[in-house]
Length: 397
Image (tube, rainbow, N blue to C red; front, side):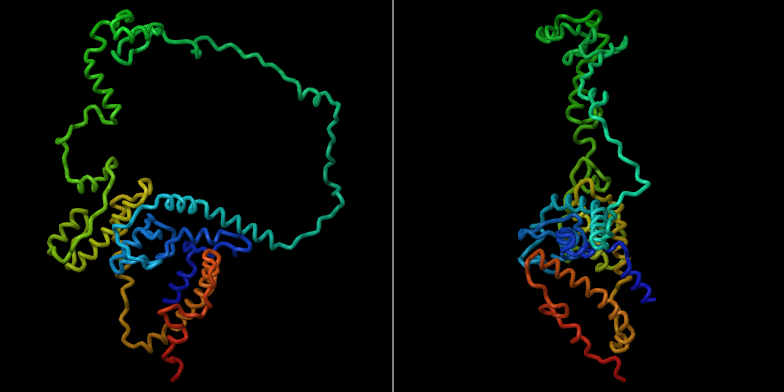
């Protein structure tokens, strides 16, 4: 069962990496470009990217989840906090464009690599018998002589009843008094303060019974507000309630951090209930749920308006996160020797699958930074080499 799930994970087609592209010698710059648009925490493409004061960018969810545990930049280790986060709209647009163009560019790069590595076939210099002979065009033919001649095509008269650009209607509506005025005298009508040069029958008040209403409607259209929209004080409500209803006109704001230690369990349950979230569980479970919701909601605010998710989608994301946390809860190992012996084949398969990707990632880092790649089996600072981890000899009996 574990082996089949591992094979599915290793063969998953939706897991992309910069090593999908050919090596830099065949396709220069593509691996570096694909790697530059990925978050250093999750190694996936930026999702709602935000930047710190140091200039490094991360996914909003990734950095908001990492800063409470360690208030430093994951890349350069400089001090950082959530107040330093700023939206990176340019990177978000670049990632969206690269996501759409990546399959095409990857296919073209692989086709170009296959074309270059394909053995060349010597072409025969003899013409094929079935190849049709090309006809030569005579230089003195009448068709060639007439190519340079200019032919004047007379335009047909417009059909009767169709309006020409120079034709104007007999009367037009004055933009100020909303009355009919002869089109030839509209300027003089405006100069007279809308008192003279009116069309016949337009002076009666029955045509425009309420000029103030017309003016009010025009101002409403100009301000982008419906004419019968309620004024201030008639539709008041809390900002959170309007945000929960999905008010498109108002820009959503970030949810502030909450000091959970000073709030009782009942108050935290009320906070969850305000957003339509489940309130079951003890206080620790409620705190974890609300803190994850704050991260998801604030990361959604960092997205561009056209890429934001609805509140119902965010609730579904939170539900999936909690379900995944239950499934991937850390297993308590009572017998380390038996556990290592039972999973030795799985460990070996994961190691062999990670070796080529690590070498390719080091090559990309060398091309981008100009640094010397680390040996494949060398341990990083603070880590232990893979051979040193095999303290227990499971084969010894």
